[in-house]
Length: 140
Image (cartoon, rainbow, N blue to C red; front, side, top):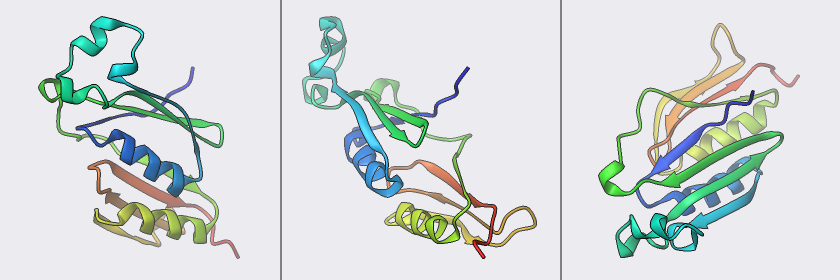
């Protein structure tokens, strides 16, 4: 069994995943729009302005996959009740990822030392996705 976060967006999925690809050092392996769907009913279910929105995207980071899509407005729900957690051993990389994800977003808890981690922080990125960054080692 493998668990993969599947993120839902309100029309910004492509921009979000290109940002995550750069920030996380991953590789987008799949990106399909509603208009590119081989299932005609799929593209017919969305308004014409959504034909270029993302039906499915996959981003490989290491041996993990982050997936997502744009959810048509009538199915869109507010993102809540979860965070995507990133666990690292390199404090400099934790700092870089945290600050990059926080650009134009909202820091909920600054990256800092806690009783369980050398560095831990929480934020909601510019696309409305909540993240937790955890660094277990001091790197020293």
